[in-house]
Image 1 (spheres, rainbow, N blue to C red):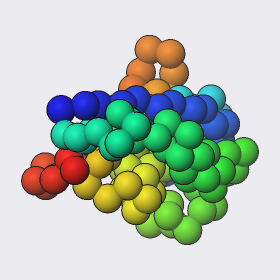
Image 2: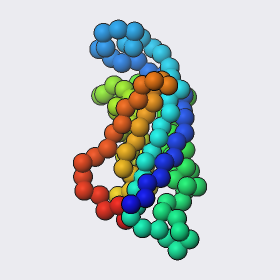
Image 3: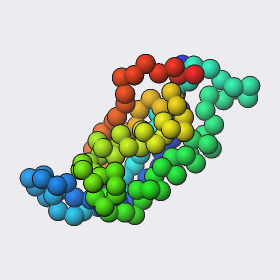
Image 4: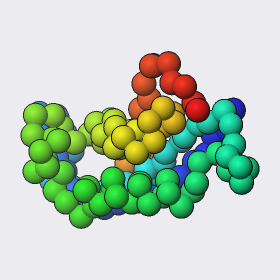
Length: 126
């Protein structure tokens, strides 16, 4: 089994509707997103997943979030733009480009606070 890790950052503002505390007010973060992808085999060049392609896709996924007010995005019309929901959204976006290969997405909201999202589905890891 091979696992690669790519990561990037994006800046965004949000507020957590219904939260009892400071996070209910508008505030921003420099988020760090890490994507862990797995395969069981290598291609003819000895590569599991091309870093360049994976990074390009992560950049595309994060560009929808970067420098936005997350609460205004259609994805967060009915749910809070929490780190948990961001991790799921990024996982879904990366999974479209790399079906069956995205193992886990971790979103760091601060240098000391992160959340991970993965599915329990049996994935082929091809």
